[in-house]
Figure 1 (cartoon, one colour):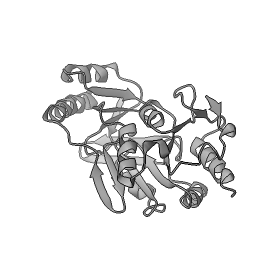
Figure 2 (tube, helix red, strand yellow):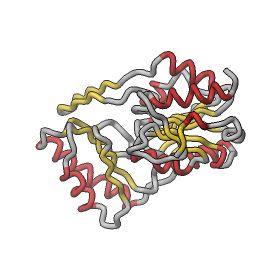
Figure 3 (cartoon, one colour):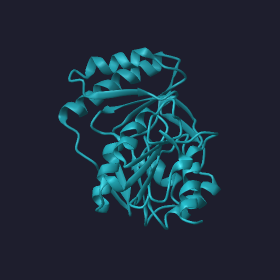
Length: 257
C-alpha cells in the first residue's frame, strides 16, 4: 500500500467513476436506533456542507457514486443535493442502484435465498425481543441489518443453521450485523453501475473502511482505504476521519482546484 499523497494525475487519467462508502468515510459513523413493537426510531449524522461542496465540484470531472449498506431511500435523502445527473447511489451492499430516477436491482434472488432470508429474519426477530444487547432492525428491502450494543455470537449460529448451502455472509461492523447472500456485494454493485454507464470497471476508483468494502475496493482499478488496519488496498489515508474528504481534496488538487 502507498500513502494517498503518492497518488498522481497519471494514476487517475482513465478514471471516470469515484465510488464512496458512507459511514466513517463521507458521514460520521454512528447510528442511534431503538425499536419497540411498531415504533422505530433512527438517528444518523448529516452530510456536512463542506463535503457536499467538494462532491459537487468533483462531479465536473467524475461520475460520483455512493456505495453503502444503507437503504436506497436513506441514501437518496441524505445525498439528494448531489443527485442526479453525474451521480448515483448503490444501496444495501450492492443489491440496488439508483441513477437518474431509475431504481435497478442488480440481480434476482433465488427461492433458496428468499426462503433463507425469511427463516433467518424470524429467528432474529425472536432473539431481538429476548436479548437486551439487540437494538433494532434497520429498514431494508432484502439486506438484513440488526443493530446491537455489542456482538452476539448466537446471530452467527442462526445464519449457519438456516444457510445449509453456505451462501450467506454474516458481517459484524462494530454496531450492526449485515446478512445477505455473498453474491450481492459492493463490488458487484460497482461493476453493474459501470456496465450501466458503458464503461469498464478499470475506469473506477473506490474508497472504503471496512469488511463490507473489500469487494468494492478490490473490484475498482484504484482502491483506497481510510482504515488500513481493517481494510488493505492500493492507497491508504492516515489521520482523522472523515477519510473520504481527504480523497476529495487530493482529487481536486490533482485537477488543479
